[in-house]
Image (cartoon, rainbow, N blue to C red):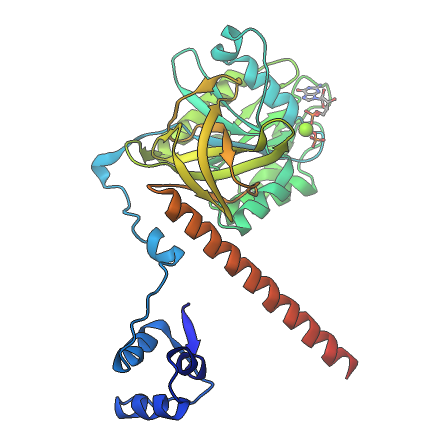
Length: 369
Ligand code: GTP
Ligand code: MG
């Protein structure tokens, strides 16, 4: 517990409330019977009566053992990219085109996308990770849960249609998340295409192209005809370089759940984006309200892998229960700890739920009055 009522504490120790209050007063702490005091004070009071309060280690305390990596531990990591834009402006077509530039997928003979996030390896060995989240609802809900997973947004704007409602929304979301935008002006193969008009529309919204003295990187592309795709990827990599993305590799992994599903044969399965450290088979973890042990991992090509480094998405088997997209994923050194944290979080979630219900029924009561 973090707080306890004075009367409750007295009951637990089998002493009279008045005695406890008196003792507290003597110690310079005036309290009342139904006052909530925090665990530290409760421990001091209990000590006076010869009791020791054994506090179950709470989640925060354990997590606080997290030591941020020192600069020496940091090494470059690939960028994580999300594609956003208005309906039908060509997001999916662009992702398909990008995937075809991937040497790894060519080697694998055809493209089998197993998970909603994948890594593209270019000929020169540089890699990029794309998160295939459908639209900005996912983006927003992730962010609302404190999950910053993307480093760069590719904003797709069709050159014939121009800036539309969802283009503006995507810009708002990226700005709110402080994620840099690289613009892909798409469908330039169309006779009606007017990239210059798109640029001036974007400039009005604060996205000023470099050629106009601004700092927003933009590429004219045709996702369908595969024109300008490599140029776009170059810009994305350039933007990534400017961000100097780094992570520690040599430590227990931490990441985020990108998606999850209950698989008939395999049980709960989730895609984890590793953001720090190296995830290994056999690792014990807590993720949101659940925990588990990595039984097996598969990369975005469905290939079994034993180790996963930062910015890499991976399908993980071994969850006790299904985690939620946006949940954290933290490797710990013992199953006992992982279980404890998961249980603590479940309790918290239940309490929050009860509190919410109580509030709702109170509000209902007031409505009736
Ligand atoms: P939603 O997922 O519904 O938001 O759409 P989207 O942004 O993923 O668009 P999608 O890739 O499905 O493309 C929409 C339509 O535009 C399809 O008919 C594509 O073939 C077409 N399209 C995409 N890119 C191009 C392009 O470069 N040129 C032309 N001419 N058509 C394109
Ligand atoms: Mg689509």
